[in-house]
Amino acid sequence: MHPPVAHENDLSTAELLRYSRHLSLPQFGIEGQRRLKQARVLLVGAGGLGSPAALYLAAAGVGHLGLVDFDRVDVSNLQRQVLHGTSDVGRRKTDSARDRLHDINPHVQLEAYDESLTSANAMEIVAEYDVVVDGTDNFQTRYLTNDACVILGKPNVYGSVFRFEGQASVFATADGPCYRCLFREPPPPGLVPNCAEGGVLGVLPGLVGMVQATEAVKLACGIGETLAGRLLLVDALRMSFRTIGLRRDPACPACGTREIRELMDYDELCGVGRGVADAGEAGDDAPLEITPRELHARLERGDALELIDVREPYEYAIARVPGARLVPLGTLERALPSLDPAHEMVVLCHHGVRSAAAAECLRAAGFRRVLNLAGGIDRWSAEVDPAVARY
Ligand SMILES: [Zn+2]
Image (tube, rainbow, N blue to C red; front, side):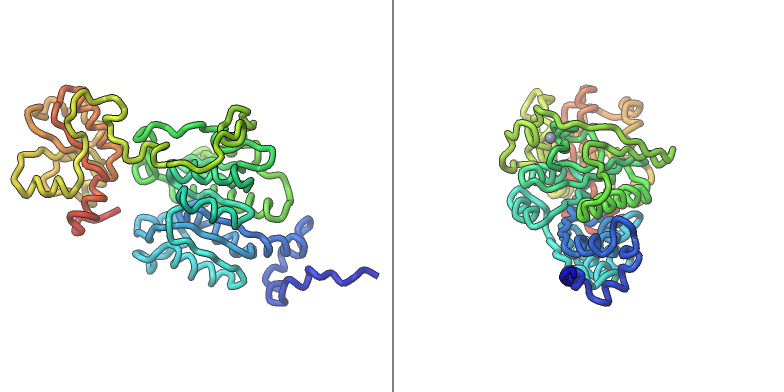
């Protein structure tokens, strides 16, 4: 006689009914469901990738879900962040997520962290989980998540999307490579536009986020063959899915040489907040940036400033700073003869990335007094004029 199988009792009758399609699944069954219930999965970000991942991981019966997100729901998120609804606009994403996930599956315990993942809290938070799902949209958090996972030995289910293309992999397993094996250092600031500036097809993070959810379930249950050592490349326009082999780089400072033993300042690593002067472009001490409040004060004072908005016409139609002239970045060179080098200029865009490039271009063309509006029109709206729509 076999002793009674104690762990079967871990699932209540309500759970057995709910998960019946898993219980009859070969290679999964009640043991798989039990492992899923015991699993602790951390989602970094409740945005485009985190939304589908969270919905499916909760529905599947992951026992403990952690969710890190400091942001609030914005109407421009709803095109892809399906965890949140129209009635959630303005709410904290963690609150919105908690309601939705509880409705999908009340058996899931959700731990919400209404904060950014930082060097100060990452080790403590990541240590609580078995699997991490990286749904971040910025390089600072992506390198931070990678390093914390490597140091703590937690598998890191990576995903990223841009425009019509996506990538996914599983990093930081016992033998597999990590994100730094692929991308040792972040790209120079401003070179890679984010989703807000580059755009993203709304269904694409759904595809990639669900690949991540699938990998997280497999890791939690110990079934199948994960993407560790492979990079999945998704092209939504051609609808092609390709995988390329990845190897651990023995020289990788995170998982190879293990030089990285503790977390660092990731803003510094990724050049966040670094003036263009640090890139060695400025020959004199002239300021290169202006904050929205400083600009407002100078305009109020009546200073003669020429405002150049380098966004696209559809963005200008949504929101504009009064008096700004629209010169989309792609047309800037052609517009140069129409600009007066004697004038002091302030260039602006959505978040300050494209306008930094425009400012460089103007300086290179001999314009001596060019300031980039730090944080763009979005920060202008937040700090100076809330009547200017955010998008
Ligand atoms: Zn590595």
